[in-house]
Amino acid sequence: MEIAIISGKGGTGKSSISAAFATLKERVVLADCDVDAANLYLLFNPTHEEEQIYIGGQKATIDYSICTNCGLCIDYCRFGAIDLLSEKVVIIDTSCDGCKLCSRICPEEAITMIDNDKSRMFAGTFRNGKMTYGRLAPGEENSGKLVNLVRDKALQLAKSENLDTIIIDGPPGIGCPVISSITGVDHVVIVTEPSLSGIHDLKRTIEITSKFNLKTWIIINKHDLNPEMTNQIESYCNGINLKIAAKLLFDPQVVEAMVQCKSAIEHVPISDFSTGIQAAFTQITSE
Amino acid sequence: MTGNIKIAIASGKGGTGKTLVSTNLFYLLQQQGYVVTLVDCDAEEPNAMVFFDGKVEKTNDIKQKIPVIDASKCTFCGKCHEYCNYNAIFLLPESEIISVIEDLCHGCGACSVACNAGAISEKDVSLGIVTSFRVSEKSKIIEARMKVGVYSPVSIIKEANKEAGNHGIIIMDSPPGTSCPFIQTVSTADYVILVTEPTPFGLSDLKQSVNTLKTMSKSYGVIINRAGLGDKAIYSYLQQESIPLLLEIPFDKTIASAYSRGKIVLEHNPQLLQSFATMLTAILEKYGNRHNQR
Image 1 (tube, chains in turn orange, cyan):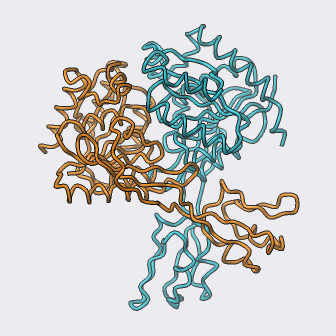
Image 2 (cartoon, one colour):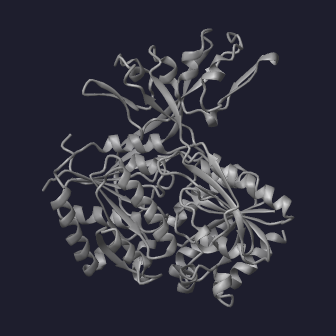
Image 3 (cartoon, each protein chain N blue to C red):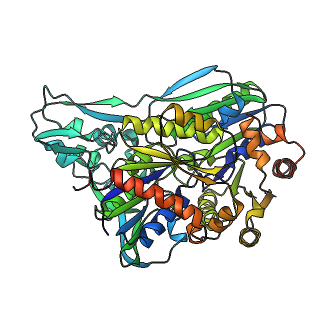
């Protein structure tokens, strides 16, 4: 069973909740799919058993010993990534999308493509089973393909190690990597918080999950920070038939757990947070 | 008063308080009479307008070209398939089947260039909307809002920044992370404020942001939000790397609660207002009116 934990808005407690889910059972597979800011390895310090290079597209580069500065490539580039700077044709790295058109049309064959090969997928063992995670190199396109790699590895490990639960910690936002993190999973858990931004982002996230017809659950974290807004979220979710799997109190001990490199389940097993997570997990997995 | 500077508010980790800082800075600059524009570059989840009222001045539908293949003209030669660097053209030449996988298309136009049979034309699809809101005589907010299900927010962010122009003080609320959308936002900034929290996750993501900004040769400083929670490791890191600590925003339930209701915290917190003002003056003195007289 694959359970993905996501949240449109960042900082709602997604990773703390994923960490808690991952330590409820003796052995699971944990996949950290927030490849742009992977953090769970900090808590779980997994062994380094496997590393794979991920090629995240390409970038164009000009050989100036051949380039005649004709500027034809500038006309063809739709990303505004080629410019004439003091009479020299230059590629603006941050804008290049790697489509290779400039390289194909250059009459002098002066442009070649270089692979973006700095991103990695890792797999190893942690105290509650197996763990996979990705690290996207700065500036690279977060296309969701690295997420797929991390998930594929997790599935493979679940099979070979005979583990039946995969916990996926997803990225924030609603873009491609989020879609890659949730397609085909058995359950999606959306973590939200009672704030106007939280509600706004929750609605956009639900738009995504309903598009894919996924079994979706809501966890309202830090619900005591704004009880009135919590009611609003609850009635909104009730109205569209989404189940609230847990309502969790704000608890500085959850932050303290992170500082101790532990999950809340390990650090404060008897707390509102931990019992809430335990109940949510039972409810989700029994359905 | 005028002044020209672009300040990006960014953070590796999500939810550290980027929008809290950008909306409050915007408020403060408004109060001080500056010509100011806030650009909400977090196109996946734009939130700045939760905090302000404004009148829509202009909307701009951001489009991308997508190829349309006329199968009756297609010779199934496969050249467009070969030219596409995104695997967005599905081709089975033996069965004479060809189609565009629109979700994978980046609109580069390579397939149109490749086709010798005149079988490829293009249509526009909407990626999102850039909206300008007039908040007061001297201030406006430009919001980049990606359509749900679009593959990347980068082109919408680019357009929003273009719309902001170069006049006055421009505050850019960046998307989280250090991938393309972040680079697109900070690349035009004169100064970057990184917002973080004093936790191991906050520190780890801060380091990644700092390393990225170093390679881009940007000037930057750090705001620690929710100070008092977590641990002290982040302070030793800042000291070790000689990174200026611009401001600490204490962890305080009244701040969190005001923010959750869409309120501007500085309106009711004179102490924090003073710290924001001091920080702002220092940044404007040091980095304002310098590079961006483009």
